[in-house]
Image 1: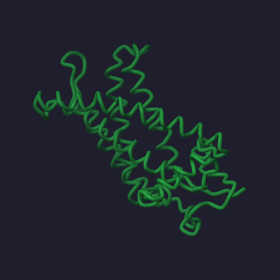
Image 2: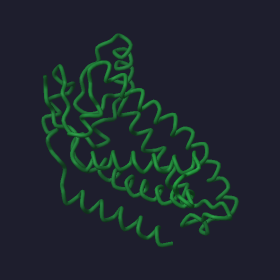
Image 3: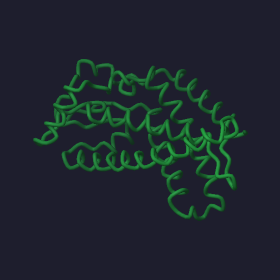
Image 4: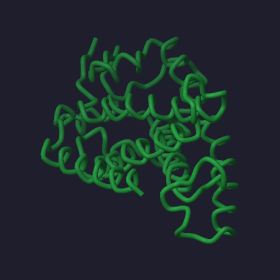
Length: 227
């Protein structure tokens, strides 16, 4: 077995924090929201947390640790098609970081979540809830963003279901992705694809950059929270 350190602590904390905030946001809107008295308000607060986490992650995707960067886990069409063929055949080529299909899914998830969080800043139900920036746009724009927010939520649910299915498929094929996101290490049965490039995989990224990005995210969310 090959043990490869892949996910740094900031990436892991982001992942589980985002999963919790998104779950809370969906729960408060798709159910009665018990025990919350004003679930729509909790939904809005959860959306602000999601926005802050995404601000951090986009910065970390540009200048963070090796496997967290966009340039590392995004692959061309050829690599994606080859991975799909391998997925159909059986054994999967091992990747230390995101595989070609997984990297594409991560990008789609980040974009969809960003659209959802940003569009939610401009919404109001004219009764109980007013988002922080709802008065910065016209009613027509707010209505358009409401429609976008609704339909993007449906897309987001599809992406989440596909993500969960992918976890099950990989587990059946012997790759424990959930465990790796907890410990930061992957156990691979074969030499990882692109291991020469992955020699710097143990780089954890700059802690000062992580702190700086966190402060920016907290500042933005704190400002919106007070509006």
